[in-house]
Image 1 (spheres, protein in one colour):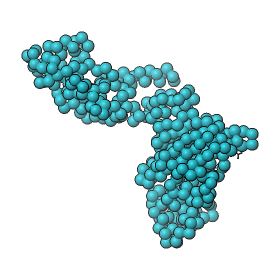
Image 2 (image 1 turned 135 degrees about the vertical axis):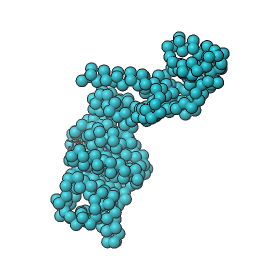
Image 3 (image 1 turned 90 degrees about the vertical axis):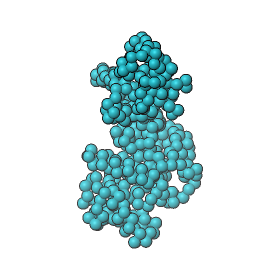
Image 4 (image 1 turned 60 degrees about the vertical axis):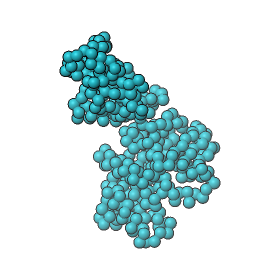
Length: 375
Ligand SMILES: Nc1ncnc2c1ncn2[C@@H]1O[C@H](COP(=O)(O)OP(=O)(O)OP(=O)(O)O)[C@@H](O)[C@H]1O
Ligand SMILES: [Mg+2]
């Protein structure tokens, strides 16, 4: 939907953007983040032509924006700047209705839309519509800024540190509201922040910049798991992944070579396999490595005939985890079902690993040790 191609920006003699290229997909929430002065605002302002690049092209829906009419382009973009940019001499209603009015909507439609937007950002219309920005708290002003940006139903919304001046509680609340708005209306949003928590919470993808370069542009999960270099590691904070357990997946914590056998083995053989591998359960798979069931020492003790095949005694109702299942869901299932292990299967139900209470513990405690060392 939006494409930056070899964009360079030089202010006087200083190059502030060094040839960056990236794409933003339709409906995607992209967060630009990086240290002060790295070029986030400059990048954002190029999207609505407030700043022209020194070279390179920017395409919106395949069209070069510098060949498009600026007014028409901006009509289709909401823009929220830091400190909201509300016009102080206009009421809340007039601020939200500003662009619709410029677009010559009918008064009725503007009132209807203003009311709708106020409700959307959680402010009672009758109570607030006639107030002036100075009669609102900082958080309420930010809400009006967001409402104004959404008012004309633009395809793209640009937001430059819109919540940076807020206390953590209002900020969290507004982040949640923005997230929900985006889920509902599927806007394409480019959002600037210098707060990694905010980025992780909101972004589909995060673009990390430094000195006018893009260092890594990826999903939050990928950035946490595979930071491109030391700068990114420092930036996100070492071991950040552990504060984000929803990003830890079965494949990150499973034992990759669980002890397994086929159902045609006998109890006597199973006991031998368990003994030599020092385990108290065996996963049973078919020839294609698809999980069939599990046999535990308990199951074996219930049967005294050593020649019985495992097929006949295995438990077939086994709760499994998919490779991408999150640590949180896995822990919840293990607690709920009171089980100490969970085989991990891929899309074709082939056995790829095993999570046990003790493997979980060792992963978590290793982490604890690492944190101590790094502290
Ligand atoms: N109009 C201008 N003239 C000259 N230099 C500028 C101008 N605007 C920005 N710069 C410089 O370009 C660089 C990038 O600025 P930009 O505002 O994009 O940074 P930023 O990443 O948004 O930083 P912050 O987090 O502090 O808002 C900075 O070094 C800044 O000094
Ligand atoms: Mg900035």
